[in-house]
Image 1 (spheres, rainbow over the protein chains, first blue to last red):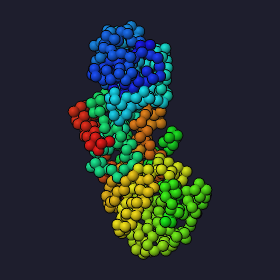
Image 2 (image 1 turned 60 degrees about the horizontal axis):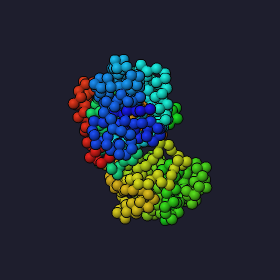
Image 3 (image 1 turned 90 degrees about the vertical axis):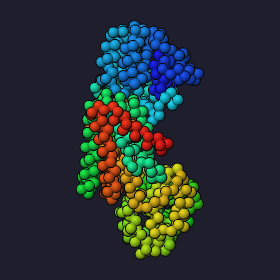
Image 4 (image 1 turned 90 degrees about the horizontal axis):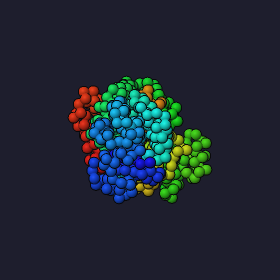
Length: 276
Length: 276
């Protein structure tokens, strides 16, 4: 099939490269910055450089853009989308996208299902995109108004380009879980590196520092949007986290070894029950 | 030289294996559980199984035990240590060890310098010890009453078995920095996995979840001891962290995009200035 990938950053670029590496589909790359699209074409990551007019040739459209930009783009260019085409996004939030995209799909006659590829790096842009970024990662599908056949098609497609598992869920469950698995670690990383000790960490640090601080090199525009559009679940997770940190802090302050050990044991048990 | 390694867990075991792999020193392994020492001997990680009486044959003694156990062991068996021998530990705290160990070194006539190898894994025990655990890691030396020649000897020794850098510091700076680089991430990991979302994370998670939760599979006995013996610096770091998380939370709550972006930018700038 013909696949249009709109937005050739790390996520979109990795889709293009994975499709070219692992399938026979034809890839149309659409990107605001021309030079990036030209680079992608030169590297063989896409078969042609497209514009919004190319949307009419696509059977599957992957919108690899910031959440609000997805809605804006389709509002503007939805009329170019082929009737019955499957449109998906890659956004890290779904409640703020799905109702509007479902409405637009009805208006313009395409099928929308939300997607969220659970992979990334601590740096961004086409240059760090990778045909194997999605290897063994999870591909989340939020069906919205898509029926089983479309969900199955997306699922098969995801597996064909390397994803290891597919998770089908609702916008609500997606956003609640992502607040915990992805947004919370990003808040944490930025908060962590603001300690006055951080600039002097070298020589005193190892894996623990590296892991917690890894994603602090954040795209503040993207993540501000994600955090604000997932306000309630994220604040709920932040409250839970602050409460749990405070419990451990209080046990240390009170020099209450038993309480402290019990709290650490609870953490260990959760992790061990997960087999991790 | 003859090196006695007391305690054949992941840290002690890795010292033995690295010494055997990269140097010609002779290794005496001393361990409470006989079967572990026998395993180490069988695997060639040590040259002989020793007891406290073997300490008199050692030029260098590496005490790879819990902090309080280091002091207890030397209090009990210090008379067996050869005069002028170099004794070091591997503890993650130093203010609680150094004064007592310095006193014991004067009493028994050995030289003590504290060490802290900045490496580990999320699992423990001899079975996961590794000749290359220390490859490119930092080796921290807290000289205590050791002179330059002993510090240089330890530094050369560390580099000879794979350590990439050596950091020489005071007990106070060590404990303040380690509260941030190592203890804080362990408190965080345990606090993080206590979210009710955690048991259902599979399919919704990727690198960020994995990184923050990695060390939650904690040895609660060891880490309770480390946290309590480094109470003040750790509580100070926990207060700073909670304050920074709360600032981000408040900006999200107020839907203050500018404030939120500014806070995330501050994190990004710290990380970027470090070239990470």
